[in-house]
Image (cartoon, rainbow over the protein chains, first blue to last red):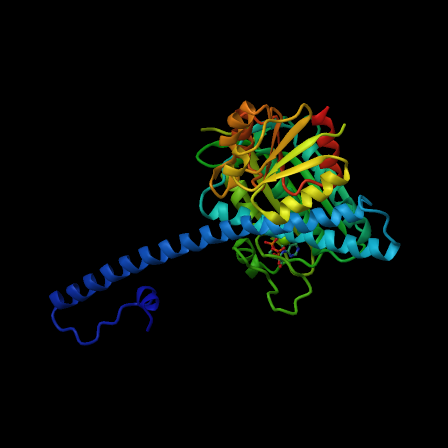
Length: 281
Length: 118
Ligand SMILES: Nc1ncnc2c1ncn2[C@@H]1O[C@H](COP(=O)(O)OP(=O)(O)O)[C@@H](O)[C@H]1O
Ligand SMILES: [Mg+2]
């Protein structure tokens, strides 16, 4: 039995006779467990820091690759033939995609190390919805999806970190598009709601829904965990970091809000998140 | 408007990509790979601009803003890999005229450099 197992499994009582001896054994095991947990925590923190450092450092060579690609694409060194152009675009797109994935890892690692801070400004949620839908328009078109954006009229502006709310929306909408087969429907709705904690807190409720593949109930918790994907086999049709929802949850919780999913296998998904209109403290 | 651009950047890969880009746009480009190299420079000519990386092997890039000013390199733009609001605020209060996050799209950088060189 490894030391980790000895912490999590029920303690064996074999060989002990007197209650005092048993207590002594338990106390010794407890002390060992406490030391072990502290060690694991320290190692976990080291790995998180490593992840943050390495993902930051990866951006440097990527910057060089993308910049050189753009120099060629933009004809700065002369015109390219159509085939050369196609190839150079491939380099840039690959580089940009890699940069995004590295950025997600960096955000995740910062979140895990509690290095993310909320910088609230006042803005209309509608603007952010429009911005995200514009960014996703090419993909929506390519998959022949219908995307509907709908915000309740007279929705008051929110006091929140605009970039982070946009990030949450981008991850949810990105998933909705990704996991919805050609010809399906995807929607984003914003409305007023109240978050129940000790008291009712006026909040904005955002729903990102799709008519896609859906998620079985037993996976509803799993998908919010780091690196988790419902189909994580190497031959899976979809490639991602498995961090999108973990990051979304972290960013929503930093705002004092919450995020959840309603879905069944085969009948689409609806992701919801709620964020208070005002950031207290 | 063409001028002299000083790229303070410790990554040779990034520095050379930037110099290909900016030289093609007609600018003269100098590269400094560290705080020490930047401090050894001669005073700036009339139309000049600094693109400043923040994490340099021998110190914080922002510590260069004032000494570079003394050499009449007045136009300093931070070019950083950190895209968080704290970094942005630190650059602006440190005297940078703008903050760009790497990688800046090639065309955008060329047009911004032309604007700053005024
Ligand atoms: N809209 C959706 N429809 C179906 N499955 C989804 C949807 N959104 C997320 N999932 C499932 O949750 C997993 C985790 O999502 P996410 O954290 O964004 O990571 P990634 O997209 O990189 O796999 C996905 O791999 C997928 O199995
Ligand atoms: Mg995802």
